[in-house]
Image (tube, rainbow, N blue to C red):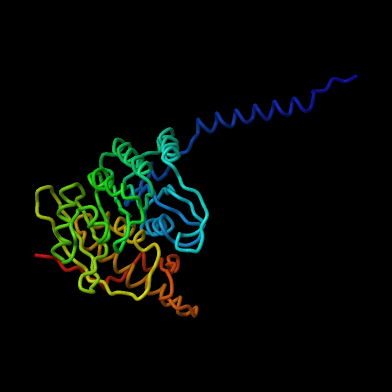
Length: 337
């Protein structure tokens, strides 16, 4: 009777052997991460923000514009929801601090922790925010020149949407680590304890925030006497008087979601090209958002036969990619003397 191998056992053994061989070969020939080996002129961003399956808020609003402007972007989704919370209902998951640590440890184990920028947006808990602070310190140990751009999303128009205890953590722990801070009027008031009722108040709030840490502060929206404006401030060296400016913004009669996330991404996006001209960076960001993207969104809703004043609108991000790359600057900064 001719001898034959036991088919099942042999096939299983060969598969196991081949799998081990492929694993060893992979470890021996792992290709370089090109965003590290051949970095772009702009940088590599770790963006920790919310995510929605449908619509553009958080990372969905920030990652694509940054990529269009030349950045490699690695997103970590602090939450993953079906849609933004302005809808009648939403479903999804919330990332906790340990899960964030797991992701960072995975990157670290593979020598993937070199970033030029970190961008953070909405954070819903103190524990998660504390973990982000640990991440910032770890990344700065790898790259001491890391730029941390923080949008301290806490609320708007006199209303908090995060627990009150987060305000203290932002004020005492986050602001000192930030390179650029982009609060709205309400958030700037919460961080400084100063009521902003005038342009002078806005400028003073920026100075208070400089003293606490960040060299660049942009209060992205301030309403004074019915007029909407942005106030920016750049303190190029500690102890020096900051260069400050304002941009008057035309009010659009509608409410849009994801605009704050997009604005901060655009400020980061243009900052590498104009590192010493925050006013120029703000002109590009505001013009992209206000003059191009929001107007396109408004016009498209009207074309669809929808009253744009009746509810919050999803921004037309993909349709505005050419304007994101090459904005027409119509809104100019005016420097304070």
